[in-house]
Each structure stands twice: as C-alpha cells, then as structure tokens.
Image (cartoon, rainbow, N blue to C red; front, side):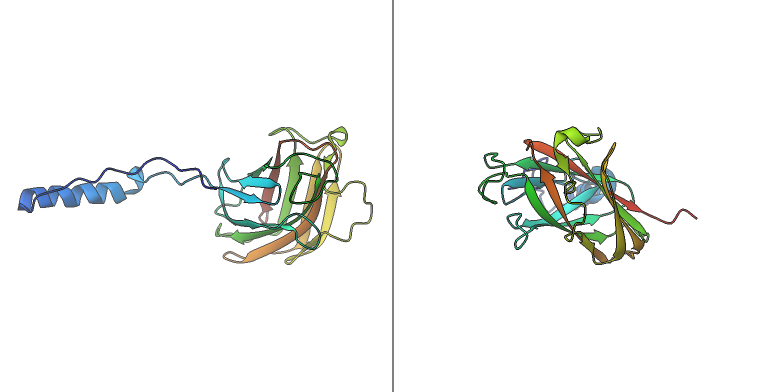
Length: 214
C-alpha cells in the first residue's frame, strides 16, 4: 500500500487577460522551483508476511515481492542516491508464529534478495548490511536476530558484484560483502538469510555502501 504524502497545490482559474496570464505563469514557475517542491511520498511495500518501508529516508524502494522461502525469497528493489548508510524498516503484517508457513505467518525465517541501483555517482567497493531490533542499537546474540548465525558454513550468501563476504555477530549482526565493485548506474544483487528465533513486530536492516578511502 502507499501512504499519501502532503497534498498538492489547489488549482486556480485565471482569466485570459495579459496581466493575470503572466501572474499565472509566474506562479507555475514558483511551484516547479526546487524550493517549492512537494516532498517525496513515503512508500510501504508488502510481501509475504512483512512490509518494507523507506520512511527513514536516503533511498527509495521501487518494488517488493516473494514469500521468504528459499525457492521464493523476499525480493526488494531499491535505489540509493548517495553513498551513505540507509535503513530499511521491516514490520510484520501477519500473525507471528515461529516456523509457521511462510507468507501466512511471520515465522522468523526470511530468505532475502536485495537488488540495489547505485545512483550515487560514486563507485562502491564494499557493501555492508546490519540488523537491528532497536533502531540505532546493535543487535546482540540474545535477541535471536541474525544473518543465520547458527549456520557456520552458509551456502545461501551471494552477491552479483562481490566475491567474498564476512559475518560479524558480536557486538553487532553485520554482513560485509567485499572484493568487488558497483559502478554508478549499475545494479548489484545480494542474497542472504535472516533469522529471528524470537520474532518481533518491527526491526531494521541498515545498508552501508562503501567508497574508496584513498
């Protein structure tokens, strides 16, 4: 579903007299000026038993689909307009039931595929994901949320643009893709499994594109 943003400007009728026509043209130009632009709408996309929102800003979700199984992962398409961290807000939209049927329950097993368009104007040489149960607070071992922490040899972590990955679980739940590059206006695909054995109604996925430091 979409949450409407601020209302637009009301329409006004102008007569055909030259003075009023000029004022109408000036008003139209002011409305189109950047300082008078209407704020972008916040969009909430539903897929499986979850909703996905770009409400915290810095990027745009352009699509969402899937149920969250290995054969039908949750697929989120995004556009990032800067090389700075952004946060995806994830909420449950169906009843919570650990290990319940995917799509009908928020079951804590979420196979993910994220397709990210690099519209930042800079090349990315690494890309990191971080899970948080509480916004801006590290996810610790006891909260049950991780990038499949129990699996020591995962075979479901992959990227189209990066050859290697590292996982860190204490004191953060982080997944770093490295040894690759995403050029401007190119799309990178990331696949991984998120698990939450004590499912919550809301949690967050921080996405951090990295640029060369030298």
